Length: 199
Image 1 (spheres, rainbow, N blue to C red):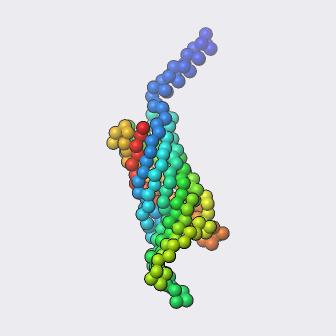
Image 2 (cartoon, rainbow, N blue to C red; image 1 turned 60 degrees about the horizontal axis):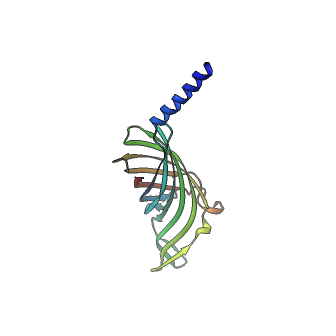
Image 3 (cartoon, helix red, strand yellow; image 1 turned 180 degrees about the horizontal axis):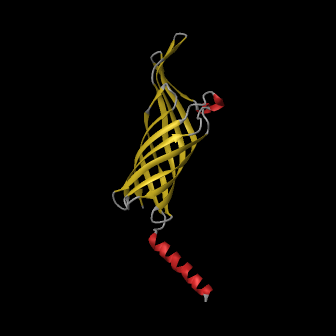
């Protein structure tokens, strides 16, 4: 009898949990980036991000949202550089990452949520651009940067409808992005604003 009651309680509990939580929902997202690096001689530049996600409810209050995004990041130089009769101005470093954030979301209301979690990044491109003595030059300098990037994100979001929402997120880089230990203090920072579409 006790085994029967225990089994019944487990079944009822499982059914109740299933009714309280929806199944996973897939979606796509896209938006703008305002990124920089922590070096003192840099300033922010605009980019974009786009990709897909799956939102997995674990209770009424919490869900987990893994994402796969392409993210265009980087920074601009604040000033110009001169050496040996060569003057470099308008320096811009663009970094392309495949990022995998894994956000834990707290659903404060059915529409509004807070989120935080790690972000793992894989560098897929790096382009430097600048004016050298008045002429514009571009270069691929991916070999100067670490392939792997790690950061921590925090943000919030709002769902206008069951299918459409907006998300704001800040990601602080925790790993050095410059290869060979040339500068231990250079890390990514990224502020994102985008739209989410849930299928």
